[in-house]
Structure formats: structure tokens, C-alpha cells
Length: 322
Image 1: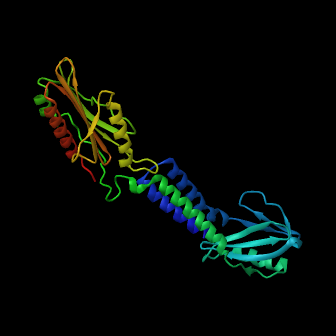
Image 2 (image 1 turned 180 degrees about the vertical axis):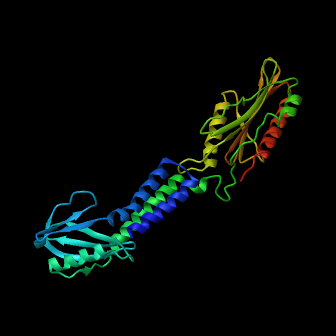
């Protein structure tokens, strides 16, 4: 049972590791592999028998402490799914699992050792009943550990999981919005970044900014989040969205919800007193993607707001959601 659980745990962890790589998974796979090798190591154990005692012996190593024949109170044959083992019981709280062999495979050394144990001890070799309580407890611990590891890695939160409908990559934005920038800010100089910074655990960002004169600005940016322990990528993006909105607000700037654009969106509009400019910031989130658009121009506030909303829709439409 031990070996079967170890092999199963290793196979499941290897499968899960393809979905979510992490140190926890590496540790689980390593532990499971060690447990799976344990039966092969145990099957190499042998006995050293003398007229006075018996000793456990491993290949190329010294023998264990001697167990006098007079101290033996029983010999039992224990059968598992993969191994067949002889348990030597003494009158002290000490047991010895030796020899052992793989079931359904002939092993003359094992048979000879069992016969010699029965002859020297003067006791028949009994077949031990399976300890269902211990098997159930071990199975429960294994299942609990597997559930904990799965919950930590949460493979169903990965964008590759069926029906997640989350993005795995971002498109380039500079060429996509070049014509829009020429209309909004003629002429404008392009820089390969987004003017509005994203806050939070953003795995990747794409953006482009066009500037005209001293303050004229048109900027479009996309941010992509990945899943974390116990959290989906969408939940991580939600936190990043809220923190980005909070960072864009100031005491004299207030965010207004925008409906029908994405899962959540906020727009911040204010006028720059004295120089006739309008600043519009739009921050929106769809699944695990955050889009930011900023426009600083001489356009009236309603026209500027419509322009940034069109840019946000175009940017989100270019993202492929699974």
C-alpha cells in the first residue's frame, strides 16, 4: 500500500508540475520519488544467521545489532501491494523487517531465509492481517497533503485551464495606435512605454506613449497578471486595478465608474487650470488584463473621454482571451 501510494503521488505531482511549477511541487515530486524507490532498497535486505542470533544485513555494509533466538516471540509474513516482508518480533519493543522481496517474483534467498527462521525459532511463520486502520490513516494523510499542494498551486486558476477565459500574452501597441496618436496629437513623438504606471503584481507590461509639446500626451498600456498561491490571475489583476486607480487619484481628482467597457473600469477627468488642457485617465480590467489610457490635450472633456474609451476598447479587443 505504501509503495502504491508513493507511485501514485509521484505521478500526480508530475502531472501537476506541468500546470504550475513551484518549489513546493519540486519538493513533492522529490519526496514521492524517494518513497517510490524505498521498496527497491528494502528488497535488497538480507539476514545473517548463526546458531546464537540473527542480524539484518545490507549489501556492502556491516550487520545490524544481533537478535538472540531466545528473544523471538513470533515470526509473521506481511504482504503489501508490491512487497512481501517477514517481521521478526522480539520480547522487547523491537521489530525487524527482513528479509523482503517483491511479490509474484521468485527469490530463493527469501524462501531460504524464511524456512531457516521457522526452523531455528521453532515457530511457524504466520500471515499477518492487514492493518486497515494504519492503511486508512496513511491514505488520509496522503490525500490531505495532495489536497493542500493542489490548493496552493490551484491549477484551475491557470490561464491554460479549460474555460478560464484569461489571457496568456499581450500584443504590441505602438503600431496599433500610431494613426490614433497622429489624430489626437499632431505632431507627436513616440516613446516605447506607458505613461500611467501599474501597481501590483503585474507579470508583463506593454505600452506606448506619444508626446507633443511640453505637456500634450497620449498613452496606452496593457498589464498582464499571473496566478499566485490560492489566487487566480483575475483576482490578482483586480487588486492591481484598485491600486492603480488609487495611485492615479489625487485629492482634487475623483474616479467615475464606466459601464459596458470591461469587468471594471474607472475614469478620472480634470482640467488643468490656466493653460486650457484636459487630462483624462481611464483604467479598466478584463479578466487578468489591465488597460490604462491617458490623454492630455486641448480637446473638450467629453471629446477626450470618448477618445480614451475608444482606445481602451481597441486595446482590449486586440487581446486574446482563452
